Amino acid sequence: MNTDMKRRIFLKGSLATGALGIAAGAGLLVPQNVLAAWNKDAFTAKKAEDAIGALLGNAVTEASDAIQINAPEVAENGAVVPVTVTTTLAAESISILAADNPIPLTSTFVLGEGAEGFVATRIKMGKTSDVIAVVKAGGKLYSARRNVKVTVGGCGH
Image 1 (tube, rainbow, N blue to C red):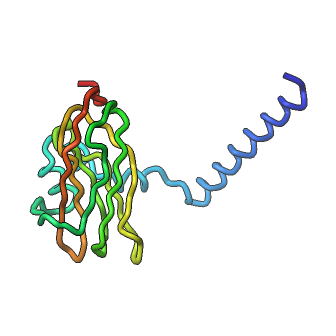
Image 2: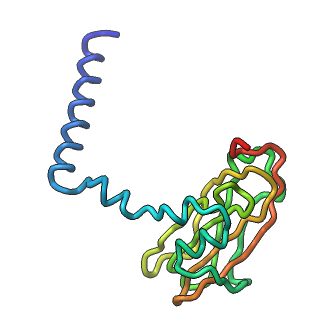
């Protein structure tokens, strides 16, 4: 590696570190604020109903045809299962759970006012299970389910 390349790498690293320092000093990066938003009870619950209750304050959901889950019928690798959730409801949040995972809650998305009811992600699934989408809209909880068969589990169990 020549001297010019080493100098560029050093300068890039110095600039990035400086920018992070300035952002932290200005209060823009405050790790405890980010961690405070994490709902430990919801993301450590062992049952889907407990996770929904801890996350959204109520575990009672109403089945809705206004929610569509797009996921493979058979996932050959449970470590990477693509899931999209679309809804025509005026969604405040969309949460995705894998019912039979050791920890069912895989993700939750809080949507801003006027946002389209659509999320896409990849989840881990330990075994064949229902994927559950829970949409909070108008203070009520709606849900839909889709069974996904997993041939190779991705949760280490």
